Length: 112
Image 1 (tube, rainbow, N blue to C red):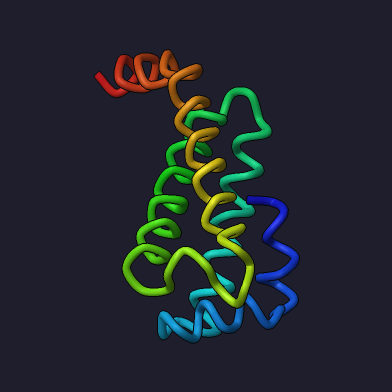
Image 2: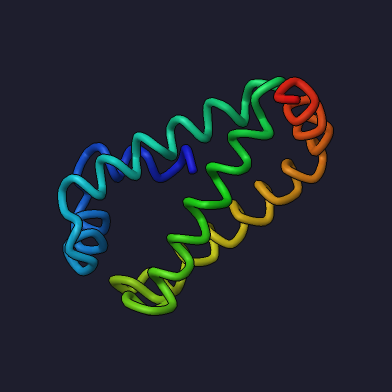
C-alpha cells in the first residue's frame, strides 16, 4: 500500500484515470491515499497491526472489486500489476490479522 501512495498524492495519470473512471476524482483518490497511509502506519506498529490489517483488508477488497466490476484487471496497459499488487496486499493483511488475532480477544475483554 505504501508503494502506491506517491502516485495517489502526486496525481499520477494512472491514479487520476482510475478514480475518474469510478467517478471519485480527486477526493476518492486523496481519501483512499490517506486511509492507505493510516493502514500502513498501523501495520508497522506491533500493537496496532491488527487494526491496520482490518483497514487494509477493507481497502484491498474495495480495490479488487473495483477492478473486477468497473476497471478490469488491466488498467492502462499495466498487465494487471495494480490488481495483483492489491491481491498480495490483501493476502498480507489477512496473514497479519491471523497472526495478531489475540488483540481482538483483549479488545473484547476490555469492553466487557
